[in-house]
Amino acid sequence: MVLYKKWCDATKEKDKRKRYWTYVEKDGGRDEIRDALAETMRSHYDRLERIADDVQRLGYKVAAEILRAQLPQTDKGRSGDLGEILATELVEEEIGLRVPVRRLRYKDGRNMAMRGDDFIGAGYGGEDSKLWLLKGEAKSNKVLGKATVTSARKVLNRDNGRCTPDSLAFVANRLLESNDDDDVQLGRDLRDEVGLKALRADRIDHMLFTVSGNGPHASLKGDLEGAGTNRDQYVVNLHIEDHQDFIKEMYQKAEDLGDD
Image 1 (cartoon, helix red, strand yellow):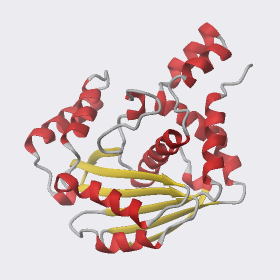
Image 2: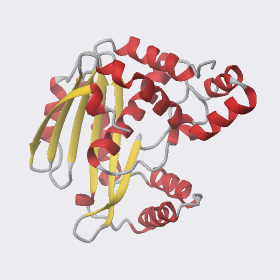
Image 3: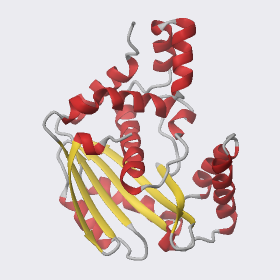
Image 4: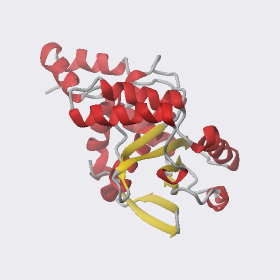
């Protein structure tokens, strides 16, 4: 879906392989994307066709209860999940890699954070059209500060900057369960990479994605300046002034399947 172009004004800076992107809501931008974002949020927790089938068989009220059972109910859980959702949509809209597995569908508990990399982008690129990955960390805070940014960068640098083996294997195995030939091929390539560790650093991009009520903290630029130059680096901030109210509003909208 086209989300950010309708919703936000963007400022993009680039210095060789380092990119610093900031997004601010346009006047009326939220109204443009509210319904579509709510549906996108649902799709990260369950397949839309399953939700539609629940509605057809059981009606809107019961279908909404089934969906609600999968969505987080705590402020912390909602904030973290929505950060991952918005990061995933940005990668697919602005970078062109797929985030091929909606991992929030596989949570152990709706209010629990999942372990491992927050999001993994995957695809094929370069002159040889070989495997290309993106390792991402997403942070959502009412007030973003240096400690959060430092913590996120530490995670990105873990495992020598590679996607963690368990996270990559998880994505690979879900893709291998698909009936789509392209998904299966990507799953095989990702599974091979878990064992071979053949990709050079310059084919494993990093993204530090932040959503915050206080806008881009100075530590974000400092973090990007200190990041390695052997890979594409993306540091992103989405400024939502009413951060907590926005999250509450969007989860209420996502849970409301309507009644007609």
